[in-house]
Length: 93
Image (cartoon, rainbow, N blue to C red; front, side, top):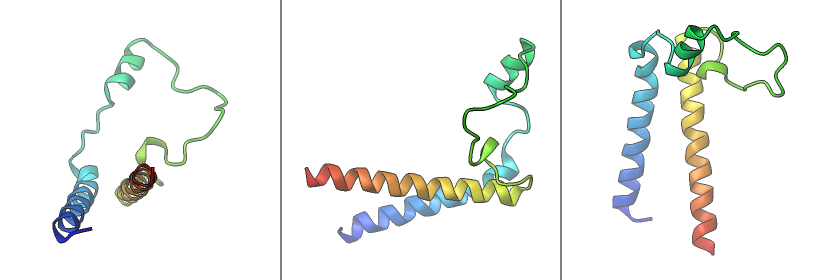
């Protein structure tokens, strides 16, 4: 990997991390469009038994902003690792 590509990768990761840290503080507290439509249609909040529980429901760990930041950072690194793995496999073939 050349220096230009490394620099671009590092800058991209830093930008993602800055967005992850700031987003819990600037994001809207209102529900998203799907949740709002479900509320308007009087759809029940949840099914009594889920097949699989989400590892980070509502993109948070716990109920604090720190939990939201942690979930976002974990998601960034999972996505980065999966993308890197796919690129590695594609490059091998």
